[in-house]
Length: 407
Image (tube, rainbow, N blue to C red; front, side, top):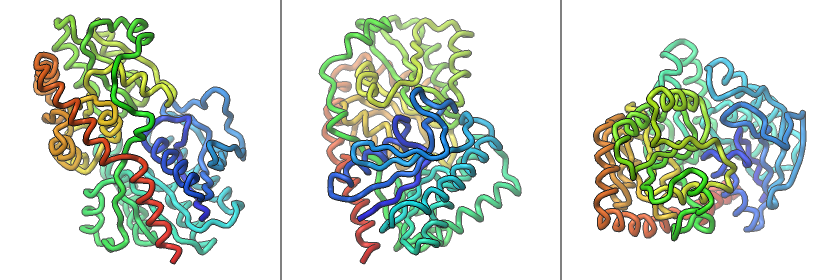
């Protein structure tokens, strides 16, 4: 089977869409499939092309057996609605053109969170007369208004019409949450063509922490400290100003430290707040290569997983919770009550609190710092739960969906 996959993000970018696509594609290749990924020059989230890469018209490389086709796009930072739309539309056009010249595929897959990528996938499927799979990672454009990046307007209404058009035209929809599937059904999309394949963890890479990375501990002055870490994209949806407030609230606890590692639209805001509040208990680490993630996570005694208080985020499952499970790192989750909080509560691998509630987040951190019995129980529960979310299982589930479309 030849799988043609369109995605804006792909390694060496280390965000959730890039990781999911690579880890699935790598396993599909191992199972005998041919996989072609059409993407752009790596630049997320700063909007700067990574060292060693260039924004060329067309370039082909091999990554662990995956044929990677990179196309030229308009590159900008992940901020500003108009610029991002230009970025997305440029990939839609160049990705579509590149897709016309690929070896005959058996199935064409395009992933969100933005659906202009899916537009290219649908157009290619129509021309090449092959099944079109829409991998739904985010309800877009609803997420734009949820974080206040844009108010409800005629432009949003037009985008919503395009969104529904793509759902209806897709041969199959692969949703990363059950909540997204329910939302689509409520909006009139046929439930029989919607499958759910959750995010997961590569258990070969993310294994239980036995000791913290000594070199990084020394570099950041974390010897003997209890570390609460936010690692990942610093986006508007995460409400990181509240995590900075938590650090301020606990600044007199000398044995507790906070890590912010990553980049994104809100990174500068975090840096400015930490400087303004003169927080000596916060360590700021720039975005790191994906292969560094297990080393970075090893520094953390607990993982902080926040989202702003919007009903839309009741349907979201932050993918980092699965990596933390694999490494035995308990989660303090401050997101609206929904599918993600249910996973944490059911697996008993963390503590859930109200979104944006500085006091409750602070209390949860202190509780895990002081109560070692509880902490150790959550560590063990996390490791045990990770087996249910192995990337191997998720990749096989998705491949079965593709195989059924060929029959």
